Length: 320
Image 1 (tube, helix red, strand yellow):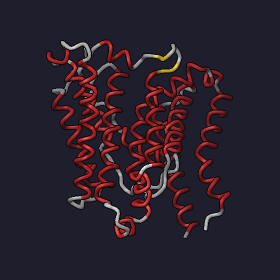
Image 2 (cartoon, rainbow, N blue to C red):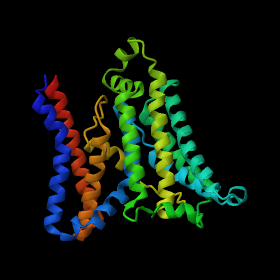
Image 3 (cartoon, helix red, strand yellow):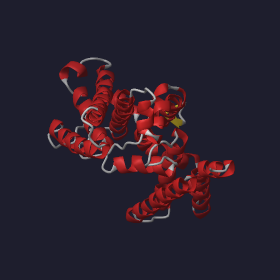
């Protein structure tokens, strides 16, 4: 049995690590704690954070989704391409319909993955690995292997718009998604059953829960947020990039794991995932300020992932 103080320590460890990292970089570089730099950190991680929130649902339920990075590319390119079609380009708010179509496409891909896992009884790793390749190939096909530029100005302005001239809209979108996701994961049947399935799928099934329905549901949530992330990325970069979002799926999984989600399922939180995402963003930003090469940034993040998984493994052993 885990003592209450140990459980509290497990929950606070990622936050304590984030604070320690921030203090370290703040001591090494004064520029780190400027308001502009902190907002830049939040803006840069907003897309990954939204992806990671969706990934958290799947991981909590005991699954994994390797396709979210490719879906960002596909949904972003699809939305960008639709914005340039004559029918929607002629409409004042045609870009809104195109953006919604991109999000819907992500939801449909999530549904496709979920049905393959639940109906065909295929492992999530294999299913989403295949979907990752399909989605990336389709992104290249719809974009004809080219970057899609010249997007509507009202849409691209969203990527740099600041509410009240201070808070980036992308950051507010990330926070809104986090709040809604937290409510769903903690206050709805989908969330409760996701934890139950991740803890013991067979016991959940025997208790009368339609595990197929709810497992498919977490993949739909993940796909929907991947679609939203694709639209956000297109707005942020002002292009549809079929080769973009490379390794985003690994960053999303890493954020969830660093934030305390267990790859064994049954554990994880939206707050922890946000903290995990910010840990990676702080490392990258601090290293950039210190002019440390990106290759070493990857080394640092990889090491932290291993430490987080090891920490989770030790927790699991302690509870047995």
